[in-house]
Length: 451
Image (cartoon, rainbow, N blue to C red; front, side, top):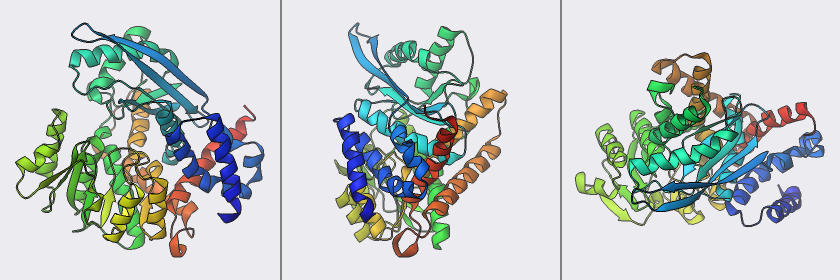
């Protein structure tokens, strides 16, 4: 990369000047730029027509006021967003996140990543992201319903089954999707597949709940197969305790791994005996009812709770970060390396800081980046779109096979573009994911001309 360092620095300087204060967006673009800018020399037309620069500038960004009334009569004003990044290969597709941390920078980073992730699935989906700084925690169902209806009362103008198909994300589960879909249907008088993650009763897809977590473990398994490693009896550290984390833990357990941690914003629980299916199901029920992971240590003997800490200093063979962005810092990555970690598969979006990612790669740790490893969720969302369009419902078995095949295909793409570029001639999965996702979108953009 040495000869390209100045080009990357100049590119990032221009991007930061144009998008001041958006640190998460800067981080996401820099991670991809380190791979793509050197790659552009192999196909100058991408550089001449500024394809990468165009990918870094969303097609449009919509910001709007969301005004709603709490149960006590108090009026609240939140901000809603939809960032439509790129629709070169299909309708915009990406989740909606409800969390106090949501701002333009976070959503631009997520939407930027989404265009590559969706490309890697092989499905015709462009990249987008949206949400609000609304915090559903502690709110009644009636308050959440009123907020979702107010949010959709503006968002409906900007989405549609052939335009933009939002899904769930942090703070947006089946309940919130249901309230938003109901409002969309009321406003448009149309019953169409405009949202994914819907309930099975009204057009949802089987295995959507499991898809992201299962997919991250399938990607891990694919990396291990190539490296001649396996899951059997190996120690697995998982962060988070929501939908992605619990299903990643579940699939790792099913494949023979010994899952020893889960976490939330209060800290992490360590269960040296390993988490059985019964324990994982208990956590699912706990989180569904608004409980905290600290309660696990009170319920299951032999486990301990570590307040205000993350699980990355627990010795393990494999790590599955499934909570949120930037949860593995450089110190955490070095602790994992010191304790013998052999592979990391990212279930959350951009959970590892750039320095941590480089530390893993320098140490020869197999590293599955989020845009590849956690693409199982959006892949099944794309399958839900297909089922809605055809007015059919595929079986559980069909969808599980499709998910497994999709993750294997994503791994193969990363292998193709990353082989020989890792430590000692190994596979650089970051390079593979970035270039593999980039090329399909770039070629579609070339076909459309300058626009």
